[in-house]
Image 1 (cartoon, helix red, strand yellow):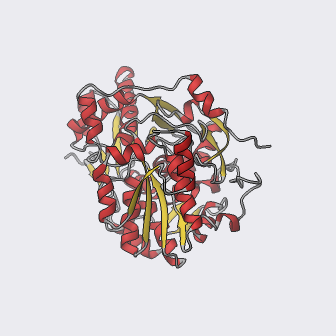
Image 2: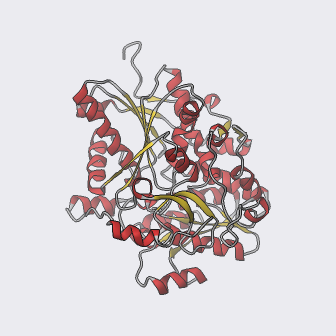
Image 3: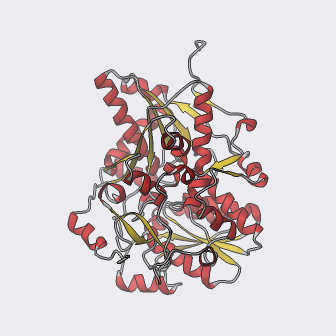
Length: 457
């Protein structure tokens, strides 16, 4: 390898790991609008949020001022089992595409959960344990978050109740069994075990479920069971905060070799991976210290950013959670049962929604057949079978690299490889057999969701 050539994989030492999370809200000129009480439509107080979330997580959720928050030593020690994660130069993909672009990806699939979700799962479980709680409840779409949380709870001795979107529960039985191996109970959602689940089943017989449905059930169980709180894998500020370790590590690694990305790309469902990856780069952009082109990539079947409305909406289908101002398709929108389960959420992180609304980032939607074409090409070049969610970012990164081939520009592209797809073989099978279709909701379909948006003064 030549003296100045970048290695295939850039590994940081444990001593180079970030010891603090970065809170991008501290640098935002326009702060995200506050969460609202679903009954009164008034800003939620810390006391009200404390009935749903752990006390320390409520503080993090409402923090607009502290740029950095120390990571507790116990969490750092857990991180060291699988972090720092590698920053990889995609030399083989570059060669296959014949592009002058330099492509890097931050790989988060090197742990048993198979994704980045463990970064926040251990933090939320830690705060629940410190508060003296017995257990936590949650929802999961594709299953990465449920797997990560079950791992964290097993490590800390907490009970874990998971409501898994029914279509994923049926498509991914092995993901479900990993959760059960770590001691979690897993219920397909919507279910007949909760009031809100029974209501949704009555209104939508035969529904395959959605993240919004599963959230409603998990919250109902948490608030009605003493010693439990609800934790979540995406959307809210507390989660993006914990996931900032992804971007902080990526930036430390790039700075170490004098690399500055021109384009940063992440898949977008609720926002945890994208928000974590872009965090320190967005901070520089907000402070006027550097500029980057940041692209959020979402499924065309659930286009929250690209076709949604920026409005207050319920975070869940059952309308029991706080209202958040975000890009949304309406809490009643139930997306088609596509194979990017972790991206099938009707809304988007309020933090990322505000940044997008203010013009700091862009968004695009892609069809799932194009996503799986990119996934297969990436797997054949780079030797990693990517998750369908991650493959949205791969698709966009490849498209940007091919544009560089046309123009001759040698841009540097960074994307987030959120996890592996070894539990997604049903999806790969349908793609290979030619049975995968591209569902794109019509304007009329979307209007049904928008019609249910709450009237907020």
